[in-house]
Image (cartoon, rainbow, N blue to C red; front, side, top):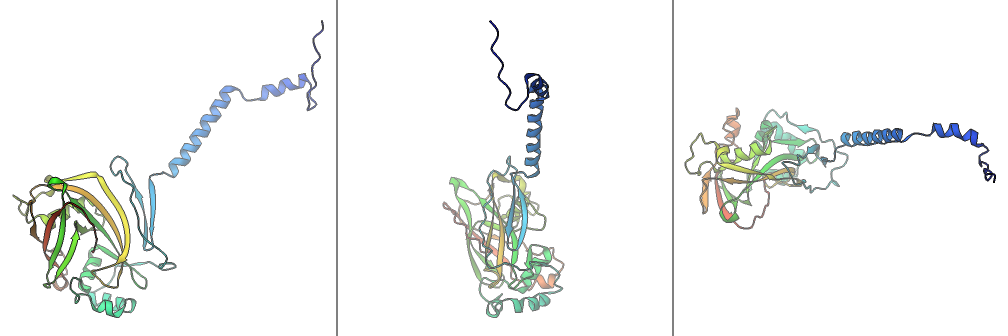
Amino acid sequence: MSPPPLHPITNGHGVGDLVPLLHKLPTLPDLFVTAISICFLFASTAKSHPSNTFSFRCPFFSFPLKLNSRRFLKIPNMSHTTSNHKNVNFHRRHNFASPQSLSEWLKPRLPSDSFASWGVKPGTKNIHNLWLELSEGETTLADSTPPVRTVQVVTVRVIGKDSRFLIESHQELSDGNVRKRGRPLSEKMKPNEVPESAAIRAVKEELGSVIRGSGDDIEVSNIMRIDPNSYEMKVEERNSDSYPGLPGCYVLHTLDARVEGLPDGDFCTDEAEEYEDCDETSVADKAVSVKKHYWTWAVDLLVHITN
């Protein structure tokens, strides 16, 4: 019996013509190499845009935040609005020669009644305080109307016995006024200072006078244990209580810590001189400073930043 006839190829090629075409198709090893190349291509693209880098945009500044998953486990939260700050030149001002020059620059940019209350209204600071903050690099001002004060703050949630939190109830100021706080230990950060270093400095300056067995040369890092997994960061926009009428952008860095040697009950501490290393002693003498801190232990932690 003769074999069945071959069906013609629909594209017009015969079987003989099809053989060279089959030799041109990629072999299995070639396909495997191609697949591996594509995988490396996508991997390179992913590395150029890492998923653990977040770009936060406040109307007053922008900065990248890189998270180390082995240390900082919580993704920072943000809370801000930008509707009232569009199309503004937010150049930061640092070069005020004196508190007087700063005052002259601020007056036309702020509500007159609010600016006049600085250092007069109980619990507020004055123009000398703001000038010192700018000089020390603790604060920046946006070149806008109204100006915007940007400050980075470290908040230390000190945990004591029975999981209670240390709260600063109020402060006694150098002008004799009392300022209510109701918040954990907090401190403005220095330029290029990391949260851990700022937290250690804050404990030494605000709690060092009461820590049992401590002296002037106390090494806070030996009695303070910071929980690295407790780190949180958020940005808030609100008007300043210290400088009425001045909008603020607050970058808040929060850490949990345990500090040895603190009293179990309510206590008071003396504040170290805030600008003791400042060269402008005549200006520092006119600024409103904190003389005493009053502390209490609370079960519920209610944070209300009023810096």
